[in-house]
Length: 377
Image 1 (cartoon, rainbow, N blue to C red):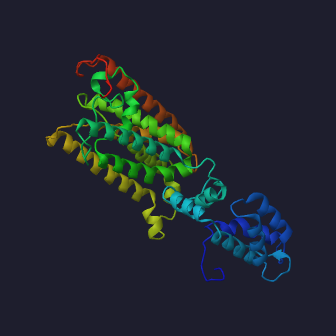
Image 2: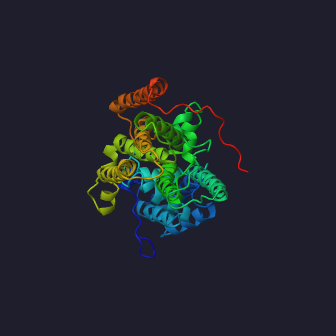
Image 3: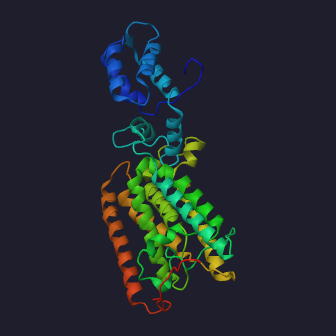
């Protein structure tokens, strides 16, 4: 505890890692000069002057050395002085990797990320893609308003846009990706934004922007390809392929780190809620319910605008298959190397099958070769 009586846990392996080092120095502990040199050179999470002050406070008997107990006090003082942003990072990372999980070096994974996280670059990919989707939505909302068909909660998506996926214009290959920028009504946009930001940013903090870019975009592409296989006659709009790729990636992370994510998982409510079984159950129920509603609306409700649902399935599958080789793995086991290559092969086979389906299947609507996207007068 610190001087205010607050307790700051230091991780399950703290004593085993540091106590033997202090025992080698004898009862007085490690000289302050050596402690100061190591911390100032290797810890940039706290300003240097503040770190010097914390070291001075930790040396309670003023003998110029830090005993093991004084070192514990120093580490607790350091944790108390973490910036608000670092505490935010800790909370976000804990939603992806629960506390108690240890890496191949025996270090607490969350603490290791906090110690080395520099926010360079910041987690901007999910924010940037969300901003772009919002801007595109606003632009088309203005266009539709001028046409006399304003956007509502559940309607409002121009089918003549060069961005929406149109099964009659599959030769315009960019539509297999650009449909993610279009949304049917503002609720569609809002739910996708909330979903991808709440799930995507914590993932990006841990796994970096370029991994998220790969998973998200390949999920979007897989979503449109899956749509062409299962629901060939409807338009496709929305970022659900990318959102479900994030769910699939989360599944991949849990599967590849199952042992670490079940570490003492029954030891307290928080660890239980963040454990692998609970995560899998939660996302399975959420995704299943959402897909079920989408299928029901597609086939059992007479709606004027049918928008495909199969992108959810394609995105989730891509997120799982691509997430296994792309996302970080806490501990790499031999069997996981096999799964690594199997996942890549399965994804490539899926893409190859879908491409061939698009080439040879005869049940698509007649190809529309007319010039699209005439400017509004």
